[in-house]
Image (cartoon, rainbow, N blue to C red; front, top):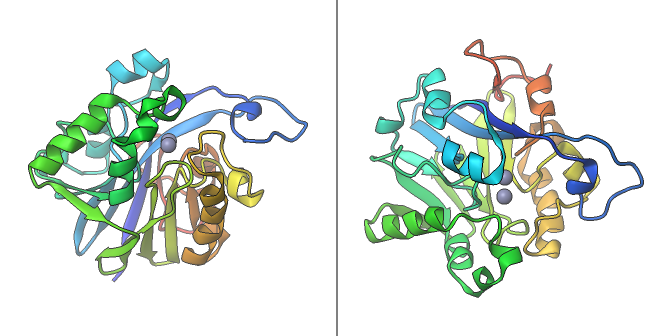
Length: 259
Ligand SMILES: [Zn+2]
Ligand SMILES: [Zn+2]
């Protein structure tokens, strides 16, 4: 039993190398960033990983929304209204928006992320800057509705599909390990924004705990069949390295071998 995985690019922004590493080597230059969501499908259902941002937030934060999330999902044949499981890797603004899109879903979240996003660190503007308070409020509302499935550490939520706390970049960041026809693929989300972050063990500058962020690079390698099975959360190279799904621009298959 294996799963198919689609990566869908839904947004992008221009950045420089100096924006993408906690400690920069001596080279600077353009290093753009893509925004993705992921859809995992198999015999045990459809799992949407992260929910992106919408046009309102894109405008406020000066980012480019290439396609609304509902359109991104529909391109892969996924009707958000019927999705039962949404995995939130962490509650940052680009991973946890579009609140009304999944009326039937339960949300898989690490206990530590909820505590982090509602706790004392959020009194500080540097720490709360990657969060939209509305995203956190909506997650609190789901808690009261009994729609949040909390996890503490590692948890298999379906055969061949597990979640793993790594922290670092955010207090409760989790990564997703998926059994595919080519082995164990790990959706790293922001545990490594770019391939280069984990290849050089060089964290992205948004980081809640540097020690955990560095340990997360090792955890990614332990969970994945090989380095080529680790999928960065924001790297434009993902679209170059994986074959097109044939479903539209910016949609690739991660269960297929890299090209
Ligand atoms: Zn993040
Ligand atoms: Zn992110």
